[in-house]
Length: 191
Image 1: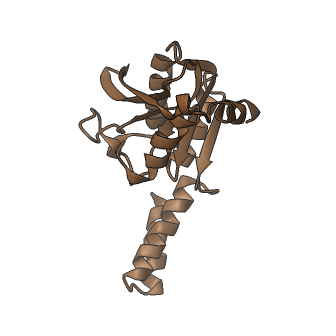
Image 2: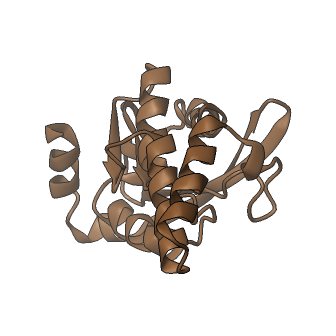
């Protein structure tokens, strides 16, 4: 994205090294969520990345997000990270949430941030890692408010195929026979 690259290059000076943090609350389906918006301290408006979580990293303090939360705002890109539903005191239940639910939770955050004075509404994107690599592009498809999506380690297969691979891997690691593995995978496919 040339505009994103230009903004980051233009803000490499010391003014952008300062970062502002603001707690932002937003609602979706009667649930109230909150997260931290990090923006460069220099005048904006700035491009924004809304982070979508990995299945195993639903907390905003998940270590893999530290470089995004710390470095991007210093280089001219705002970030918004919130704990996923059912995590870190947030309402809802991750275990029963669909990908659409998770995509729409982030889109509710976008809706609350789109008119923020430090955000450039034409340069808002979704960033997702692993499972979030499916959810961020889904969010971009569901909303014209997202200009782009970034998928990091997003599987190139369907969620069902990815989970079958994971199940097979763990069964084989646990020492189960080929017959047991085949039966388990057949049961997964039939459900």
